[in-house]
Amino acid sequence: MANLNKILIANRGEIAVRIMRACGEMNIATVAVYSDADRAALHTRVAAEAIHIGASPPRESYLNIEKIIDAAKKSNADAIHPGYGFLAENAEFAQAVNDAGIVFIGPSPFSIRAMGDKAEARARMIKSGVPVVPGFQDADDQESLARAAEQIGYPILIKAAAGGGGKAMRVVETKSGFPDALAAARREALNAFGDARVILERYVANARHIEFQILADKFGNTIHLFERECSIQRRHQKIIEETPSPLLDDELRERMGNAAVAAARAVNYENAGTIEFIVDPDTREFYFLEMNTRLQVEHPITELTTGLDLAQWQIRIARGERIERYGERLIQPRGHAIECRVYAEDPSNHFLPSTGRVLDLQLPNMPGVRADAGIATGDEASAFYDPLLVKLIAYAETRDAALAKMQNALREFSLLGVTTNVEFLQTVLAHPTLRQGKATTRFIEQELDAWTQAPHDERRTMGLIAAALAESLDKAPEGEASSVNDPYSPWRAQRAFRVGGELPAAL
Image 1 (spheres, rainbow, N blue to C red):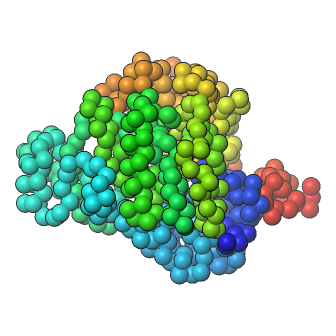
Image 2 (image 1 turned 90 degrees about the vertical axis):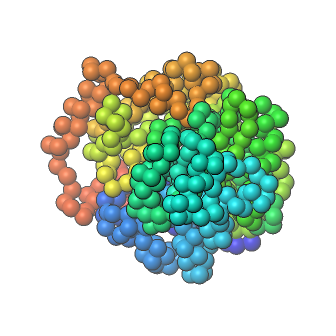
């Protein structure tokens, strides 16, 4: 069994902080990496060590494989945890980590590559007997794709073969719209993933998006930890997730769980991963969508209903522990959990990202509510990175109670200085369609596309005033983090709670 005494987290924001806290409970020291924009970011203050890896643009820092591996070597880290996003599903990164003699906390490069290519993944699922949406992945020239679209039947979904996250996806309603949509999808795929290849799938108009959490060890033991429903989306991006799904009954849950395990075994998967499906609520047929070969943003709701720490299990599997004694039949999920993603964005202005200094952050403090935050008062919401600021997770014995608890949590949540989507989340949670458990992936598009905040909303007004005041505050010199360099700063005091951290001499 491998000894993992120090882990470098190759990420930032809330997921870096969350992994560091999991490591802390296991008495494992942590190393943060940071860009120029993140010199004083929360994850650098939570880690035992922090190493600068480059300029603010991700390609010069968080996507720079050589700099991250060099940081791991300099800090004598035994392993690297990629979090999610950035390099988390990059097979070349996983291979480079392995080649450097460092443990990669995730699946093998082979599994990442096999599931990262949508065309190859579809072919593997078909061979393994996992249901897939009728589609086409056998050729990539325009003539073959156009002919396949007619055979499948419109509406058609065009998807990037080498990507995910809702990028380079186009829904095509008619034959006449296919050429332009194909060209647009190719351009976006090339820009986002460096690969212009696409695949086609039949578009399931009123689908439910349901995923299954997978755990697999190095000894061939693979289990699922039940489902999460992720149908509440905007522009193919999830904003609210829950477990269990209001749609599934025991029979459908078992069928989907078995398919999820089969999908993972088809690529000899190990560590934590997620198999995503779409479900036709009318026929109750389900289809493989993709596999995310990493820890999901929404993993906390599974943790609250199963009692397992998935980040810790990633580490345990990476160091060679077995999971066979934790077969899914021995894990009985209890209660209901809901997650809301708080983004720095303005729903009343086409969800445009918001930036600025967080002048005051107050997280809800009540039983059954968890807040995974990547920021604190005084931090900057940067334009360089994903606008996810905080994840609020509510747990209760029933779905109705969990919904009520989440509404209370959102009412208690307060962030001044940056515009967020909190009011929009409250509106979504109060909608009858969601309350009845009938929302599909087109729910926001159909019901709330024209949503705008009230012009005199008190919280928004306070936020705008606070943002204006932020401009008058003195800022630290460029490239310097005064709060970290000041031995009397409360952020320095917080270092005492880090694994391997020491109290400042002045305290």
